[in-house]
Image (tube, rainbow, N blue to C red):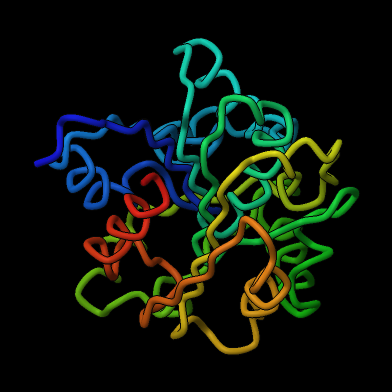
Length: 241
């Protein structure tokens, strides 16, 4: 147990999920002497009662940015899974001086002016818009754990805890200034057994070999923190080193 140099981790979950999905990784990091914050974004998980048509990407960016500001966090390892690649990119652009390292876990990696639906397969976009239309006009029904290729033992648990995602989080465009480029260390982790056709490998390929970037692979489905918590935690601690 390394208590001499504890690091601060902020772990941001993806769409339809909540802080619950990081519970195993959180436990490992804490046992290794680190400080861990796992915010649940507005409108999902245990905060699903706060969902509304007004919840968008900016809402979720504020969720994380305000956590960092009001808890006076610094030298952070900021981690985003899947949709949260959008969130942590915007947060790091706003608060670059507080971020020591960024880690993208099988996550979207946007450029200025893009929204998640610009980066997702057209068939997925169409299905999500239709899902919201059929529900209440503003929330998207969760994708199943089987579609994420979550290990079979955890699929019922994941399906039970996932909640509808506000559609505006997928359609609001990100605004970046370029300050994110000053974050000194960045890691992209690709899940090699994710559902085919999603295309997260293109984000990994875009940064492979770039200065200040490292790329890693995990042989599991999309929810790497659930399928391979030990290996995921090891990558996060390596990013913090």
